[in-house]
Amino acid sequence: MKKEKLQIILITVLVAIVFPISLAQTDFDDRERNKNTLRLCFYNLENLFDPENDSLTMDDEFTPDGIRRWYKSRLHIKIAQLAKVILAMGGWEAPELVGVCDVENENVIKKLVYDSPLASYTYAYIHFDSPDERGIDVALLYRPDKFDIVYTQAIAVVDTFLRPIPTRDILYIKGVLPHKRKDTLHLFVNHWPSRYSGYAESQIKRINVAKLLYSHLNSILLMNPHAAIVVMGDFNDEPRDESVSTYLKIRFHPDSLRTNELLNMMYPYVSQNNIGTHKYAQHWSIFDQIMVSSAMLSKQNAWQIKRKALIFDAPFLLQTDEKYMGVKPYRSYHGMKFQQGFSDHLPVYLDVFCQ
Image 1 (cartoon, rainbow, N blue to C red):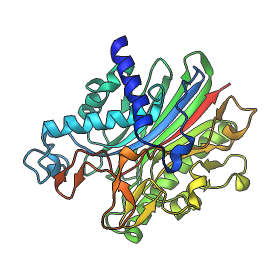
Image 2 (spheres, one colour):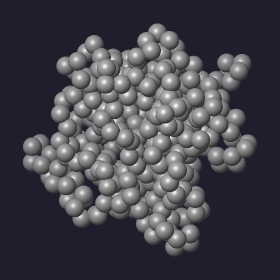
Image 3 (spheres, one colour):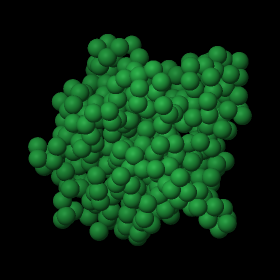
Image 4 (spheres, one colour):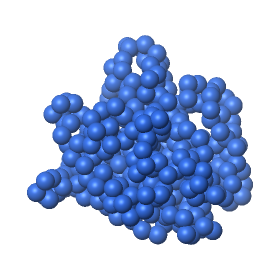
């Protein structure tokens, strides 16, 4: 086990050396973290499907007989690629908490956690099946030796008549450091409805989820205005979009932040061009975001942010965009061709610590 862990550390360090740092990576911190510090990551794994056909969901595209020819061998390649990204994102050691989305079921999560280089870090996971039509869910990977889970809940998305909506649940986790059990950290992992049907047509769906999430955040903050809360996910909307800024009431600049509000930690990127986590045609968007409660910006609070959130845009995750110029995320598929890439999203991460 020690030999395997040393090999993974060497691979992680080599990745940082071989692939020159770019864009957000100028601030990448690969130093060993102490027991009070956690690296919180979020990564849209893009179509991490189980090749077994599920008759109850719309997963036919990603089966051996589907148009993607999604064989077990291709799943194994993708699992290995995703594990490389997660380990590289951790720096000297694997990240302590990794929120993920676009995973079909527990089987593929198990393969990622137990049948990849991540196995050396004894990850555990939190996952619930959601009513999404394609069968995709959100999950949290965590290292039990670094973070102790005390409560979990799948928050179902419902309409104004409390009828279930066939989309991804919001995953709520409450946990503590094993040696600091009185200081609670609240986590929410999200994957909001996509823009597949068009921005205007789908916007109401994301606003609906925003209202639901806000009600849960508000209930926590009403009980404890100093609560440490981290919200992460693929929101399919940008920091300035109505669902995030108006209905979820997330601020995207520290100067406008008030008590009991949350700050979008992607704010340094909002005013920059050609930087984002997802690219459609020639346009980069910041769909993948991490937000924190205002208390985590105070030096008086137990849980605090250590530094700004970063987009992990290491060059091996990018490829030349021959059509629209520049670069784009290196996906698993180019059209219908399996090219052994990673995802159409770039991951994001944030370091927090408990004093």
